[in-house]
Length: 67
Image 1 (cartoon, rainbow, N blue to C red):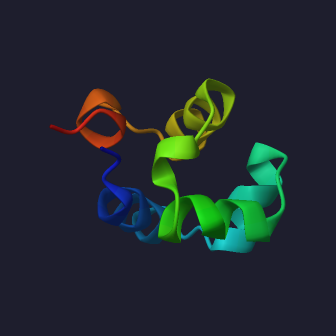
Image 2 (image 1 turned 60 degrees about the horizontal axis):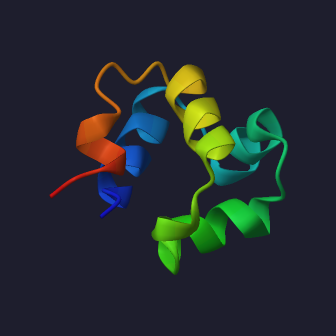
């Protein structure tokens, strides 16, 4: 289960909007919004890596593989 609230918290902390993060990830804002709001389980490994790197997430397992 993906903790999308934590991703959004990290976005806010680092002053990233959906548009800005999507550009950094190389995806459309619509794709990122869909992943965050409707189907977070469909993040690809590459997308997860981009989020972790861009938002400087120290413990990605707690966000992307939350039990």
